[in-house]
Image (cartoon, rainbow, N blue to C red):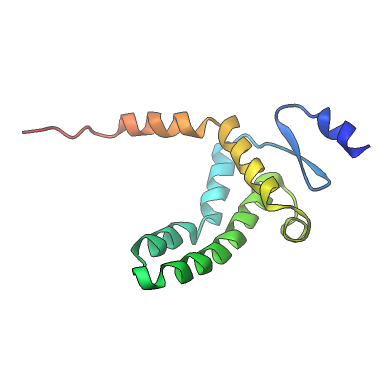
Length: 125
């Protein structure tokens, strides 16, 4: 029965376990909240990139554990679903699908290209 309802969703909706959520439009207010929430991810990426070869896998596993908590909080913020509900009920593939659809709905790939084109171009002497 649940599959009937899942199949009737519009392109801007999906289920996180049993909760129907809208794929958010990232308004300036939502961007501000998102930037306030993104705390550790940039540092974790740098730690992974700079990890010595002998410690690489240990650093990656630790970073993934910390990043998963932060990603869960980001999904909760964007979906307006409680963090505990997401941690206890939502599968990782659903989280990834939600984030992918959010990127697509807000054309973040195009936005990144446009922002890059605004940066000063390197001139050769």
